Amino acid sequence: MRLEQQPASATSSIRIRPTTVGMGEIADPSQYSLPANPANLLRADPARRAAVSFRGDGVTLAGHLYRPPTVAVGEPTPGVVMCGPISSVKEQTLPHYAERFSAAGYTVLTFDPRNFGESEGAPRFRYDPNQVIADYSCAVSYLITRSDIDPENVAAVGVCMGGGYAVSLGARDKRLKAVVSIAGGYDIGGTFQQFLGVEGFAAYLRQVNDLVQRQYETGEIAYIPTIAEALTDRVPVAVMPNPEAFSYYDRTGRDEAPNWSRTLTADSLESYFGYNSVIHAPLVAPTPLQIIHGTTDTALLPEHAQRVYDAAQGAKELVWLDTHNHIELYDQDPYVSAAAGHALRWLDRYLGAESPVQEQDLRL
Image 1 (tube, rainbow, N blue to C red):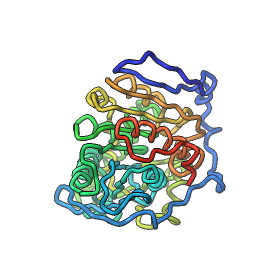
Image 2 (image 1 turned 180 degrees about the vertical axis):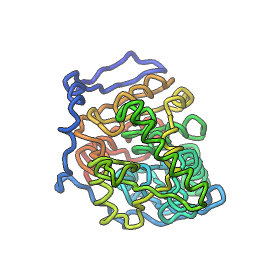
Image 3 (image 1 turned 90 degrees about the vertical axis):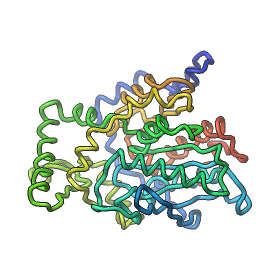
């Protein structure tokens, strides 16, 4: 990893860039489809969180609140609202970051988007990025109403699709003091088109369109698999058709989040493929924006993280971490602790929690 210090100004800060060799290795993605090392897997501690609920737009959203263990009951702290990957529930991915942020003095809110997990909403398992962003905004509103939150010091932090949504939220919600995106999804249709080619992506999307057409004609909701190890004649359409996603969600869906759904509505993919937060990046300013991404992310390509950084204005930072794949930043160390350490450095700079910790202290 190579560290470059740019001239200090309102529009730039530290960038951690991958070496040329590191970026070149992305050309062979097969070597990064590594199984998770059980020794590196993180386990969340349910005792660190409390169940809460709050109003969304016409529904009740279920969340978990992580309070700093060293602050008095009711004492106001800076707040962080977190959002996670597509289809995920609050028991997946986010607890590992929330525990680290709360240990550093922040009160953290995670939640199930509408239609998922313990949150209300119908039809079940319909996923709409714009609606998730609206839920994200409601989560900020809820956090600000709490007496144990400093309403002038609230940030948004997202992982995977939640990272892209943090950018979109930062573009429209100026209550936020900072935005952090980790392994973010920014241009989903463009990413799939790169993977499948123009004609291949069009054919893939046409299959989705046909399912939605059938749903329109019959009135019966069409569902598709959330994960698949690969696209086959038997499984021609899935939201995340790759071994990496399959291994993560199959494992956590059984062990940590039994209310995670293995299906989504087919029309979810139409809105999902239309999501693009690159166009929102310039509007985040003047809110400080930090982008953290893996150098060898073969699910959400590094070039899109670079596009978001380049498009952003004002205080911004791009951090490259030497990873092997995408999901290492979900629940594996040392990657989660490294990403959390960089995020905390950014949050401390702009929100200033009382008890910042060093990166080496984050291995809980």
